[in-house]
Image (tube, rainbow, N blue to C red; front, side, top):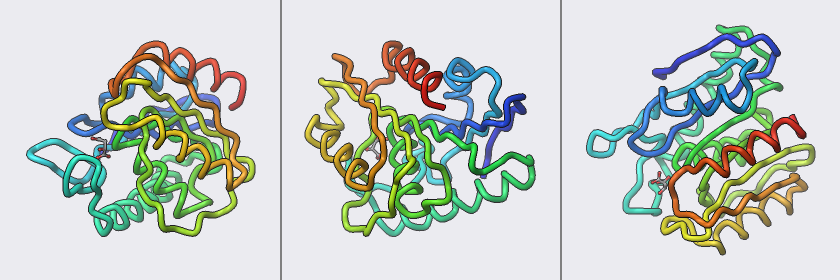
Length: 199
Ligand code: MLT
């Protein structure tokens, strides 16, 4: 997969996953802000929607192509495993950081592969899959940035996602901002505080 790798010094790796229409450059400044000493591995989504990169196909707004989601989830997981060998980082020290479509595929990876990463910062995520038997998420630590005026993700969907994680024993912190679907400064600052306390 097209990607950028920046070597850090503290043994941690932030796995950066952009939103629809973004690319592997987008989240680099946020990754550097969250942990200036971590490796940064930032990936471009494999799928194009009218020229806009995404991590899996969708049939309409918020309606996902589940075959594409399954395939791309597996590819992303395999990519991460290979990258950990190529760049020699510890896969157990990976923290996913995804926005919107990138957060959605990060969740799909966590739901499908409990060995992939157990820590994640998810900005404006949705529930990508509902009919899976989920693994135990004991020791998982998850930060969610959500907007009370998010037109793409209802507050109920966020609450439902949190309860799916908590049912599997993950520890979840939700940061609500009075904003829409866009990534905003307040949630990035809160994510940094959470990261410094928890990771
Ligand atoms: C998705 O397709 O993953 C969500 O609708 C969010 C987005 O547009 O990226």
